[in-house]
Amino acid sequence: MRISSRIMRGCRESVERAEHELIALSRSIHAEPETAFKEHRSAAKVSGLLRDEGFEVVPGAGGLDTAFTARYGSGPLTVGLCAEYDALPGLGHACGHNIIAASSVGAALALRDVADDLGITVMVLGTPAEEEGGGKIAMLEAGVFDEVSMAMLVHPAPEDNCAPRPLALVELEVRYTGRESHSALAPHLGVNAADALTVAEVAVGVGRQHFEPRQQVHGIVTRGGEVPNVVPAHTSALYNLRAGDMESLGRLEARVRACFEGGAVATGCTHEVRSTPAYAELAHDPFLVAAYRAAATELGRPLVSPEEERAMPTGSTDMGNVSRVLPSVHPSIGIDSGGAVNHQPEFARACVAPAADRALLQASVALAWTAVQAAEDDQARERLLTAHAARRDAGRTARRDAGRTARRDAGRTAG
Image 1 (cartoon, helix red, strand yellow):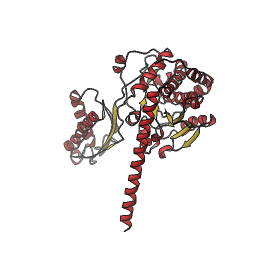
Image 2 (tube, one colour):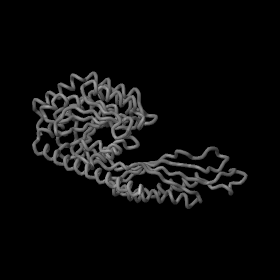
Image 3 (cartoon, rainbow, N blue to C red):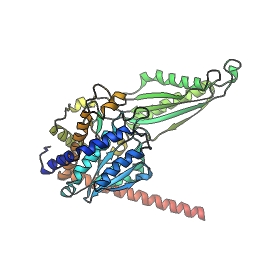
Image 4 (cartoon, rainbow, N blue to C red):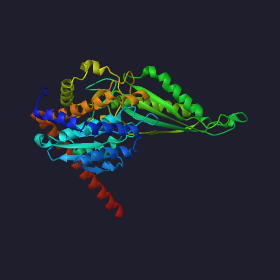
């Protein structure tokens, strides 16, 4: 794919004109980090800038207080740009979501200026709670993404990767309940919930040699007891389970749940396990990956081969769930983090360094150019529009059938 059109030059110039506003937005979000579903200031900053730039903003998308949509244009091909802005507890923006939000806004401004020429609608989706909670999953289920033909964002990382391979993920919380007793006077009358947790952790640990490729388990103790002279009656732990795909994740979850049950059986405790909505593995759209790679190459980004990209380590994202429903791309852009990786304090500091500012501007251009290529390529455009229409019709049918079922059930109850 060749990057040379007048429209693409216009996109770059639009980002250059908005440079100061975009960098200010990124740094402002970074300065006031907010965690999952609490990103009120961040959502207001992003949506406010878009509203000032002529976008029609609708807050509370999908019933989430800190989600929104911002729309410009009326073309049949709707380009969705996801803006993440949640931070990590205790670490702030150590995953660089300030850059994600600002670069999606930058791309939206660039595409706004050429929307009529391309026959597109530009939609920014403010998507909260990516680090935990799965805001995009809730928005998917609420039908917010039904309006989108293709979805994109760029994620900061130590290195560029046009097609990273985020893993499927589910978070499990296990809680054990035993019985208190004095640790010295009558330990035999207690049922030790800390022991149950220890047995479970050991079981997970010894099972690691049998994990399938790309399966991972990480856990923390969130409650280990209150004081050492009382047999702990209540303990809990939080675990992240990751795997290469949802099927492998299901097998891993069954294994870990058995370990949790083993802790309860061994100690006589009761236990309960709670889970969050699972994040699916990411499935990139091949055309959008190729288009982004062409854009990044034109910008002079330091890219490696697809084979080297596949070997790079990665995390997980609720963008994986989006990618299983509609054509998506989720590349990474390097920010010269000096050896620091995501979720380290040093990476958080790197996300507002001059190199990060340059990366967010280039990410804005690369996203816009990716959308331009999709809109101008006749086959790609037709494929995206056809798939979008089919998905929209299927969603309408499902909602209509659900409504009929609800009305029928309500009638039976009334009768």
